[in-house]
Image (cartoon, rainbow, N blue to C red):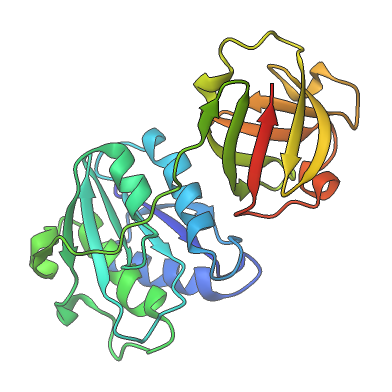
Length: 261
């Protein structure tokens, strides 16, 4: 059975995801469709890239990931299909697909040019429905990526960066805020390996400081207290037990984080 995932900023309450699914199923009726999310912050390519990066290791080979966060839709920006680690990625050339594809292995990137596999007529404002969805369906049905266009190596790259440790200070950046208000950083979780469980630390987000404790779980502290944990994604995360660290610290993605051990 063909497996296709969808990721977008279209909003789960809109009709746009359903339109993409309708196109996919009309071309590949046996496809199983998995929604990663349709509630990525509008136009936030980096947030979408993180969500895709977070989940791709758990999908089987031959999965086709169709990701559409596409502020440049209808412009000269290119459409891509990427092959990596036995999985395929379809979406715009704006960096969205790159971290997830790199996580699986070596990338082979193709510029989608063969309009024979598009829905006609293709809208200039909804390539998710008319370009990416049909291409994903054809790939899931056995189309080889090279049939879509030439291989390229000048695609747009995107990186989350990597936090650093300087003595007793961890420094990084908030790369994603989840639905619980947890602040997911680009600081590798292994930086906390030698920290005593329950140790008190100071967290600073854009010069706003607060006390927290290093723990294994959110519930290792009292309700409302801040914790620093290694999240399920392997990154250092700042959270509030039964609360929102984002609200508590008035934090936003892209802001600098210091954790003073």
